[in-house]
Length: 351
Image: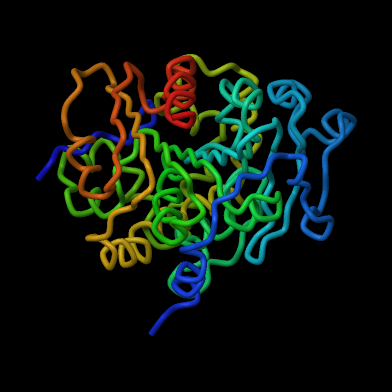
């Protein structure tokens, strides 16, 4: 049994299989924003500069918008949800997925720089941020990483991208891992931040992990128990009660508070509930499958000497593991060490 790093936040042929078989021999193409205009039927709304002043509760503040210069800020319809996202820049497409308890603004320290060389796409996962809250569905299928990944495949297709680079953190990294298994022809390269695969986590859980990562177990309890408890305290207290990124600007913290509503709490709990149930069932069925695209793993040492857990575990799940690098950070690498993350991204995605 390996010692899991805490995720404490300082911390017959299926339709999909048929699509993958048909797409396996297709040439990989990369669209740039000039050929990546979303179809009008998919875009439900687009924010203007006036909207941030007129309705900051819905769209966020002007100060947050200033962190993403030149980015469009839209609501986009998928078959299963309405997804709030920002996208901007020019070059090869790069999809970046946030985790719990955040939204796409988590990438504030990297997005503008990356947009100089990439078309950067920053969605809120379903149930999180300003994206919609679908019903759970049978066995929580609508909050499985598979269905979340399908949202993102649809978002990228609506933006004109049939294949793309992928970056994930925390729950977004879990969505990314599932996406790489279900849609390997779509993901050119994957970089995941501070995440070990779901199957490994659940089959190696121990006392220390449970004490430090208690929210996995708490939020997976039947509704409405965790939702009721979490909704009973102010958002700023709840989000500040656990260690957060040391370099997070107040405007970003305020944005996460704005989005921490009863809707988001229900969405997050459904996500964790699915992770412990239907996602684990899917991951158990796929436990011997390896993803095949080039993979970069970055992880935070949390003040401890680097160990071999991340490289040892990821070699079991990825056949083309290009590099595994520890950074002297907590859970939020992209905020604690944005320059180092940027350098790793550029080196990996340009290679």
